[in-house]
Image 1 (cartoon, rainbow, N blue to C red):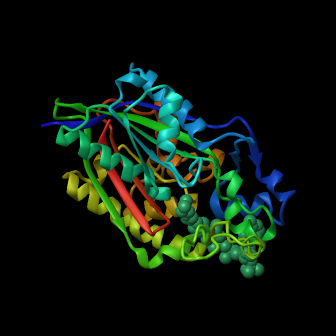
Image 2 (image 1 turned 135 degrees about the vertical axis):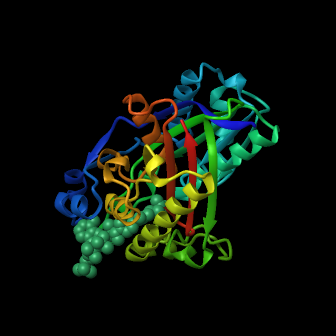
Length: 331
Ligand code: ACO
């Protein structure tokens, strides 16, 4: 049986550290508020002129090096982001050019926090079907350009950070390692609980000075609604995905959850009865890096020597859409 294995993993974050104290000089907030509500201590912000595909390029290079591959070995690029370089074309095309390869297919996945897991499930299906053999799956974000750092946007702005993570997915026939099960879910009734008004294509003209004045191009979030649904859906995923994969909760070495809020992940751990030490986190240092958060955390755990061959990992995410998704993988 062919399974998709993670042949290489890499990540990259921009060098500029922004602390909670730094943010409290821009808006009415405090280190205590941010830390106690979310677990976040600091995050990285890209400098002006840096694109999402620039961060993705560094992560991709690290993943390719880890896989002992070069860009020309790739058959496909799948790029997950909510902060693409431009409205179109997709950031995968910009990344492909920066990698210096031509003709390889590129597709963007615009699923925000679950984007990486939707991309990974798609890559897994391509590989198991035999259509492609080596797929670069990237999650990358430059969110710092699209946050409202005034008091109006403080509930959202303090949560997010920039970064990138990538894996190279390849086929493997040893029957042990690789992706065992994936789940993809959505409930579009909540699309506007976490969304950005612009670009509302029904509006003519698309952008007016009033819309800029109103802050229509900043993300809006009903924090408590997102929080409640995230805890419920993520806990459901833990049970349904382990059941689908034919493994027990006790078999899981680590849960690698999307890093939206440490309180969400601790509540999920408690709800499903998995020790909280098994829920890995890096939100303290990176905030919520949306599509980048899972591959960034995976790469950091790998490079810290935490992961051993044969470990069972459960990747879970919840976010805008609402969407929620999971991947059960034997490392
Ligand atoms: N600093 C200080 N005060 C703030 C800030 C801030 N940065 N932001 C909001 N407040 C104030 C509000 O104005 C409000 O004040 P009021 O009570 O006087 O009206 C108060 O703090 C709200 O406080 P709480 O109700 O205690 O806030 P809560 O515990 O709900 O925490 C938070 C807010 C952190 C946003 C939480 O709801 C949350 O994490 N929600 C989920 C976020 C999430 O998962 N997002 C997923 C992102 S999906 C994706 O990545 C695309």
